Image (cartoon, rainbow, N blue to C red; front, top):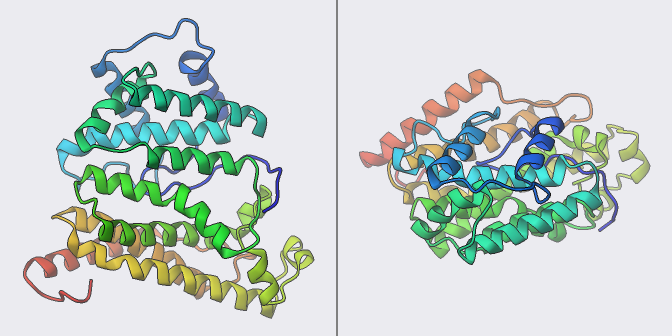
Length: 333
């Protein structure tokens, strides 16, 4: 893996999406960051309000809390989202890699204080009851911090195993947190969830090959590029060659396999949660279908899931959930 990269926004699926503006986040740092003096200690109610406001003030491709989610879980999802939002912004909105690593180290210490029963940051004050309610271990949060730290040091990957390990820490923990909060965290469910989350992140990588190169990131593994004889110079020049199209087909097919391998999770989930998770998985599959539909020419055009696609995906997810409820299509996911 290569070092020295320009920080930029990464996708943490299901709970995070669009980044904050740098100026807005700098204001948050001034008020709640490590140098804030003195930092106010909020009540639990005020800390929860802070997380709810943070979660509902950012544009999302999918809402953090959908109408399908049981109301009792709304605040818990806001709390976890707010933690992810801060971690993501500390990696991407603080100016440079050295400063980002310092802030991420501070965020790790804030997490440790929370688990030790001494939260002081409003996000951690709100998050502590969520951790207690669902017996959430520190590992999913620590893995996310580790991935954000890696973003400061690594801008491309030698092989798919390295990229998969990154997805394991940057995407899979979010699905595991969702399973914890929905009380569906079993080894089998975790394996399926990990497959969906990694598939989603890969789909986003292949959708954004062009945009990521703009910010100095290359997610197409070097080993795969060499296998298909697509050179470094061709990549830097964004050349669409037969080799590139074959490479992209290979990567799209692999991402599709991850998503499909995770589909057995859906009928194992309760009620309306089936629709939520089905919608995310099918959304990833739709992105891959759109890439295929443009002949894998992602240098020339960014494939998009349209509003019309989103409506059809929602209707399809609801119909599949209804079919499972009455015993139709049990094996079709």
